[in-house]
Length: 126
Image (cartoon, rainbow, N blue to C red; front, side, top):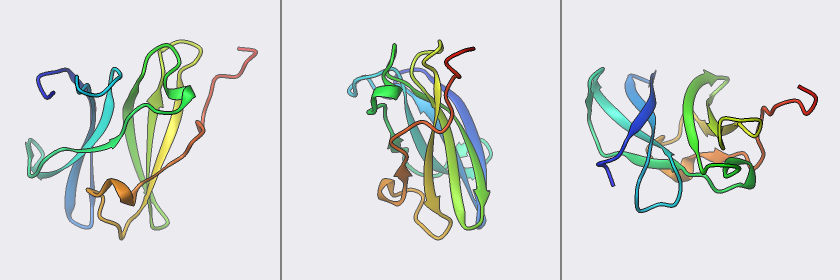
């Protein structure tokens, strides 16, 4: 399934390696979009294969639509923090979190820990 849409790409550099993280649909996986990571040779060329980081699996990620999208990366205190949005873009839209050590192989999905609960949700009274 790479003949599908892709969106929300973001790039970051860690220890001299540039990475691209983006949302894309894989028609062989249930859902609308998953998050992938790949190393980059330069700002416009991938240097290796895409690796699946996360797909919608928790109830909060599958409310309305099965979505993981909108990645954003922060590196702080020895950790890579990757936030992303999940679910349909209505009241159920929420923000999830993947974390990895800066010493880890970021291209190994096992290096990442996915929070089972969203880290940011809509306030029920707004």
